[in-house]
Image: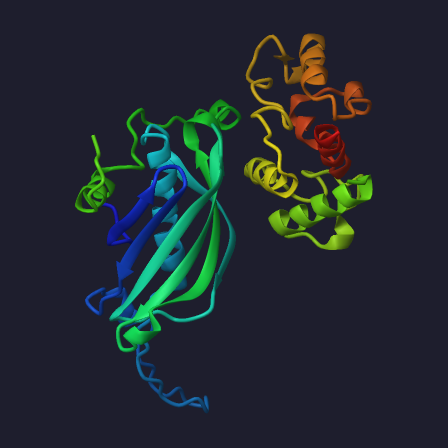
Length: 184
Length: 126
């Protein structure tokens, strides 16, 4: 089972745009370590710090990578192995904590046989302040490689990848199905 | 659009994509050797050029493809005369003069300078 970082796809415009949401829950164990309470350190004037559970920004980037990756994969009927190749830009201005909802909107900037470039916005809905709606908190630009079409050079080192599409496994298929998107 | 205007747009793209400073991007800078571009960056550069200048770039039009893998074009790590003819035909915006002295396939990437991109854009717009 792949670790999924989006809960539901709420909009999909084939080859153009995908919108997904992620509900952050205190039941996610990593939030208890990120960040755990800190006892006072002798000689450090900071003193004790209470726990601060916030979603690691690296995982917000992973959430966008999954949203954008599905968008790119779907555009090619999931025949290509779509691999995250580069994070061109990632700017996030606010922490996201338990009880909040993230919304990822990924857009394809360009796509060819070799890969795809996407750009995306991250928005945050704070259920304690519903009147604010989804507020923009960041922008993430990603570059994906279609693995099988880019192994010409590396193939000489004897690397080989399995025939089956290991990128889009059961976890993704379940996500697509529960989001009402037809999958084979 | 003048050559200077094209250069300035290309420079902005490279500064953004390759995280390099303005003064590092000169017409002679090699994308790979001087600016640290890797293969995946070429893909991003193609997409950004399309956006900035409003034209489509076909695969293999700006950067070569399927040459290094073809035994007719590459032998013992060097590009064959036949391969060179194909490269020159496909990539009229590239200056092959220095490459001809030692046509190692591993050095094909070094052929691409900032000026190569400017030439390419100028031809496309012209």
